[in-house]
Image (cartoon, rainbow, N blue to C red; front, side, top):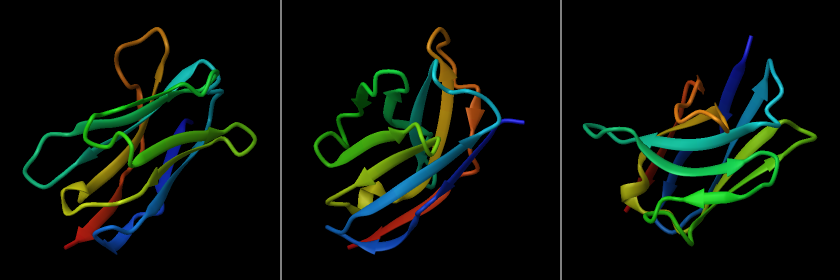
Length: 119
């Protein structure tokens, strides 16, 4: 059974940093793209960042470029999202997700972790 389990969310002040983790299990993700998404109250879920597992090539939404860094640790089967210079508008539930490199759709999703940034 595939599982993606996020952790690391919390309440921080504007300008602070947080690191989210997504622990993966249940299959090999070497041919996958792993992504982070977020959903704020009353808004649609939006893409934040993704990383190609095999090459570590990252891709970012413009809203987080230069502030967030996505990475993965093959030995720990974990994906990270380092979030610096957090802003109140970064407040959302953050989800980890995975898709095959040959698919446009994310097949696997975690349960989400809340990030709240106060001004």
